[in-house]
Amino acid sequence: MPAASDAAFADLDASANARRERQRRLHALGAVARPQLRIAACCALAADVLLIAQAALIAWSMQRAFVERVAPGSVLHLLAAWVGVALARAALGWFGQRSADRAVRTIRHDLRMRLLQTLFAHGPRWLRAQRSGELAELAGTHVEAIGKYFSGFAITRGEVVIAPLLLFAAALYVDRVVAAILLCTLPLIPLFMALAGWGAEAASRHQLQAITRMGGHFADRLRGLGLIRLYGRGDAEIAGVRAAAEGLRERTMKVLRIAFLSSATLEFFASLSVAMVAVYLGLTYLGLLHLRGSELTLGAGVFCLLLAPEFYAPLRRLAAQYHDRAAALAALDEIESSCRQKPVSSALHSGVAKSTAKSLDAGFRRHDEAGSSVVAAKAAPAMQLRRGDRIAIVGASGVGKTTLLESLLGWLPHDGLPIGFDAHLRIAYAPQRPRLFHGTIADNLRLAKPDARDPQLHAAARIAQVLRFAERLPAGLDTPVGENGFGLSGGEARRVALARTLLLDADVLLLDEPTAFLDAQTETDLLAALEPIARERIVIVATHSPAVMRWCGCVLHLPEGLLENLHAEVSR
Image (cartoon, rainbow, N blue to C red):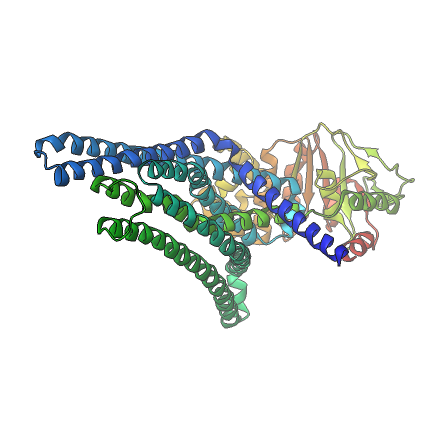
């Protein structure tokens, strides 16, 4: 039993430490806007101090007017002061809210930038394996949830610590019984907040997960809408989206039930406490209760009655915003969990690179001017390429041609590869499946060089044979295309990507199947146009085309089974 008890206490202590650490990490996100958050918190506290003065002015005015029966003119200065205090509180509220909004905008922007940098740090290969809709939800719903925490709970938390103490001191100065009632009922609210918070945090986490899954599912289906229609799967996918939405609705209702239940409970205890103060004051005025040594004046009673609901107001606001804290903690966990997912380890990549070098030994073939293929001597594991060199990487589909290009690009560790070049050279890459965005062809070209002028665009487009089809379009290079190059054929999209690559004016060109889907004449014209450019650059091409192999001169054959070790490690 003692051992079990010690283990239970250790688990509780570890859980408490974990909660404190999570809260610390969440709080640290506000460091970029700490001054604005402090200004907002100070404005809220100043408004609470003025609230005491406002209640005192109202009570004093009523005492003077209804008990002391002074002339109405003698109360006007009190009413004027009350109006001034009310305006000052309104101004403080406006300025505090403005500072809070500015702080939240800064925090959201900083968090999104850090999230974007983290996702970029994972590299393109890792990003390709993720669901874009889920990543979008991280930057959308999850960041918004964290922003709501700083706009509400984080500011109110500081107010809760100080404002009730000030109001309690004011009530204690006027009537000790009222102060005792407030003090005795105060702990009930934090107790029920903690009880509701445990359930709210778990429910919020499940809801955010459901939102993430729903966003990813819906975004993927929108992207593949044409394919879904083509195969007649529209009704099935609508049913899937409906089921996902129903799951999200159920999760959301659980969160709302907890939020409404906790708010109703706290409102009940706050109202009960205010009612106790009102009953005490009423019985005292009726002479049925004698707990004071002196007579209770009307002004003192009104002052205490005005302070009583305001004493619980910060706690009630904090309770209403408590589910924002739970949602922010859940969102932070989801963001950190997603960003902690690492791509395949560097050690694994290094192993693949070394096995690649070993498998490629004696794998070079050099074409002579007549086009015949001659097996060369064994290649050194780190053959350094110079400007003017061209290499064609060939092999069966799936042997690793694209992987080799991405290793040379730096997306994967490239230690031990049989070819290399100076690390200071600038590299440009035309992928096998280029990404074209919604916009004009010229817009997609300027992605590589935003300040490119029209003559530069036309020069790159002419070399890549883009003008071959663009000149037949109604607006030429200003013709709009859809997402992922919708409206262009596969070969046309690759030519646009090649033209975009040429605009970078890089020292090394890595081209993945640049002539796929092209007819023989267009391929010949493209290679002829690339000839002057290739003389001053290193060109490495993954291809199946004999014409490209002859154009390159050097051919690197990749053997079968090159990536078997990688697939085995990933499956484990």
